[in-house]
Figure 1 (tube, rainbow, N blue to C red):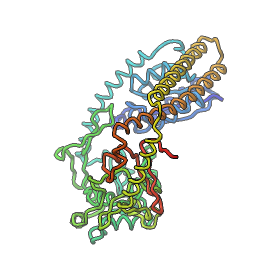
Figure 2 (spheres, one colour; figure 1 turned 30 degrees about the horizontal axis):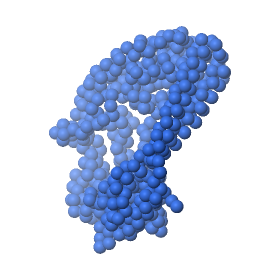
Figure 3 (cartoon, rainbow, N blue to C red; figure 1 turned 30 degrees about the vertical axis):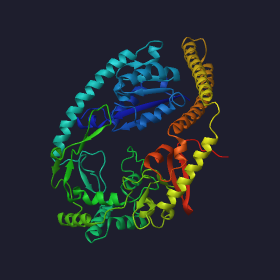
Figure 4 (cartoon, rainbow, N blue to C red; figure 1 turned 90 degrees about the horizontal axis):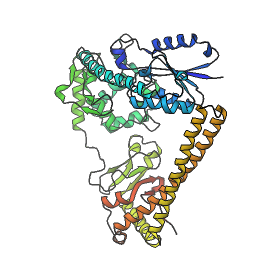
Length: 509
């Protein structure tokens, strides 16, 4: 059975301006369209949507899932208009002129009266690009209008964020309001109470982790508060830390003050954000129900200022950024005392975890790494290629051959597509040829990657020789420059086992 995909997208801009481009309106339009077409009577229907996503980029979860199935399970894509699919003029034209025809996917834009079946053999990318250009200009103008509308809403005490911050949830009565989340608010109030009574942020973090209380990102993910919002950091190792506790204590929004416009996007076409000056912030008193009183907030602030300085890896520490826990993969902190040592940051806040056992004295670490480094340099000097230039030349020649072969296969892909479009071969033969060519290209790509690794190894050996390997062989102190040049990362495993990942291929006898 053939399958068609209905794709809908609504952005925050549409919603704020009251446009009729809501997800539901689009669904109604698309279903009305397919019901009016007898040819789609027995087709299977799938739905994909991106609610609250801008069309200026194709980095959207819904469109990503759809494009993965295009040409495999999905044979036809239907949208309200081109702008719902995307506003990037180059990418839209590329999909319509190149990708979808190659995949054998039919594309329909209802309001535009466009059906790729009626445009077979014609390049329509320019027409679409002109429309997309208009969309882009419209987006920029719309963005300015929306910014103005949002700013007025902020000044009125309306919350403009995509999702509520920890302790609050989006109001059921108002799209732009916040209400207290009882469960999370209880944790926030407890944090302030503990801090005000003199409990240090480290102790608070340890306590919450021990009780199994989820930190903000994990909590939001568990509660499915924002299903379209991706939380890549909300993993099984996402824990309460001193920094998270301190950030909550410093956040005056918990007193009912709404602070907005701290940052803004530089341009609609980019994800880059700039921080605004404090004078440009919008601050509204009593914009929402407070979780803590002004007095409770002030007492916690005083206690926070008085807490001890956190022991982190000093900027002058040569090992900074290189040390990782062999269990959870998080960084190691340096603990300064008579005999400085490193320990897993997770273990600091979860004393009962396996990560709590991950620690190593700095002196032991330096001695072990220094010995391993000298040994590897010795082996590298003994195993230098006899004809290094010849070896590099051969690798580059093989890479050129592979590039030539891949070019021929890609040309063959276009030839097969042209034969299919011209009726010289049927769809089954075209798909078979396409699959065969894709497998050949994939095999060549794997071979190419292996050659790149070999070339990289040769170049690294040359680079290391330029650093004077002989000089490194007799070093007695590890400098930052040396460690960064030769080591990618150092993982500390249980029982003080040290695993070093070098910036060059490890050698052995």
